[in-house]
Image (cartoon, rainbow, N blue to C red; front, top):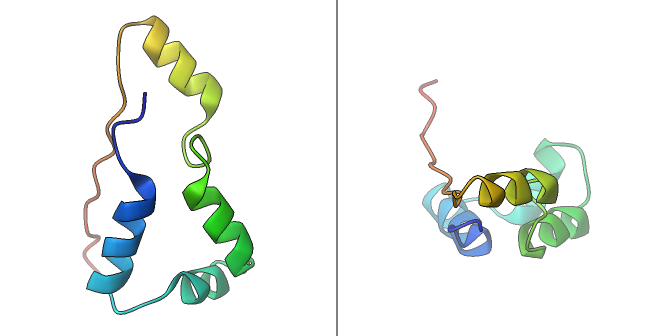
Length: 70
């Protein structure tokens, strides 16, 4: 199981960076609807097979976000 609430995490990071999901979509050259679909989909960010493998090994998944130094 992925422990993070990715939808909430993205919204918070957007607010912290004064950006929108639409701007992110433009930056990565995709549509805002695709970005939104990936964020809302339960296994959209982390591959479902990977999740099942880690669960079979007795692990949950927690994502950690580290701000890149530019």
